[in-house]
Length: 75
Image (tube, rainbow, N blue to C red; front, side):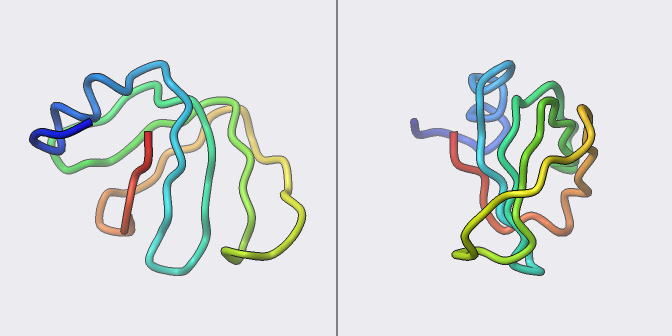
């Protein structure tokens, strides 16, 4: 996928995405929504507290991630 970031997010709605944060945390979930600040709403989320650590912890069904904390979003 290529294009402007918000176009990529639009095409990724309702799809599984991986979100990496500045803290090193990584979350995998279905992209349910976003806004112009790249704040994200993920559903059916799983995640790990450190990238590369084996095992994932199950999180709430819906997670909101502030766009300022996002390093990358992989569709």
